Length: 533
Ligand code: ADP
Ligand code: ZN
Image (cartoon, rainbow, N blue to C red):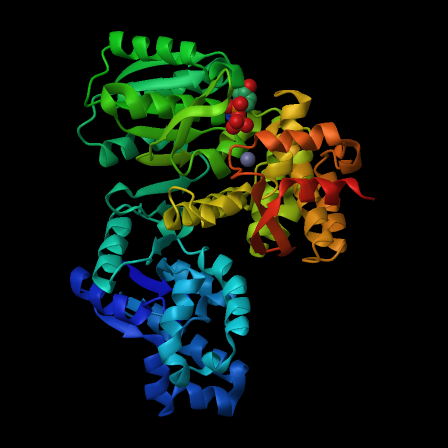
């Protein structure tokens, strides 16, 4: 086991959990702040007073350097340690970074008692809240986020251990883990990794002999045969099935036919499903796995940018009813998510561009992704996609944000709802245009612009944000003519949003990139704000 670095907001339990975890793993442990206090003979509070924030950060860097160079151990870091991106990278290079995810009200409650002894706690609650909003997205860049809500340090340490046992070698550089106790799983993103999927399945699912390989006609023709061959070469029996590409395959009829094919093909309770394709295949095959023999493992192998960064992570599966999208489904977490960005090379330009809308969403959820998203805008919009390490990093970064959010809120009670940024208006546009006419990501891109506009009119952000978002979307070649869609008949479509409670919605507003606010607001008010010039 390499070194484990615990990061998280003040009072998230880093020191205590580090001690319990170290004992469980039989490793030494160290507390960065204590080391600094020992070295200087001063409390952190007086150090801050005497040397200021900058002086303290220098000492912190030096101590962390020594720790990274030394033996493997469990390290409790300071609240600000990963906020210097250089230090976060240093830790990721030396081991695995684990975020102890704590919600703001919990943090505030726990902090209450500790005010006097901690330097940054002399601040007011509002100041702590501001700090929390800035830092929460940074902590989510850890390879693993484990929720601490309602758990004692022992339970947190146990869940960290579960997650760690699901981390793949090289997790620090190639992936992350969705931490859900015993159902934890790795999300791996690496060029060329399709070739080694069989080995990974063998180690994650040792009991499996038969695999149901589900794909669609396009993806199946491109990657199905070679994947099948490599699975068979590793000794698996493979039952292959492909569906017609596109959203219309997500229905009960296709679902039933697929189930029959898998059963008659010989899949049994100890088999697994592999979903090779975009969101449609992932949703359909995921739901099949959730219900076949009351649930068998699913391995998600996403081949679209949208699926790699979003739909393959988090366990939402399902099909459409005649009455609406995704109305029949289940939460069914995968055993493994295996993304090979090489497959993006063949993804149609329009699909790539559309997915860019969701990437901008991630950059608005984590401002640290903004620069990479911006620099890749022309690359993803271009006719031919140029493969690059930077693109791999971006896919990994977005999947990481998704994994962290799902780990903290599997069933969408709060935080996970922030992933719907831009989707309230986006869905209305998608629905009005007719599915397929405007792609999901294209609608989300417009929805993000609408979010900026509403947020500005609510007094939450300045008008510049909308222009900034429009500029980056335009570089990727996306439609940014929001005005063309701001008509009553389009906006009225928001009224069928299933996330609505009564006449109000939980609107995800923005103050700046990286700082979102859940805003309970009447639909009529949003419509009013968007219809005024
Ligand atoms: P999404 O993930 O965007 O929901 P879909 O599953 O609807 O995607 O796939 C979008 C389209 O792109 C489909 O026609 C699908 O067959 C095709 N497709 C998916 N992945 C690839 C790929 N890697 N190369 C070529 N075409 C692909
Ligand atoms: Zn979406």
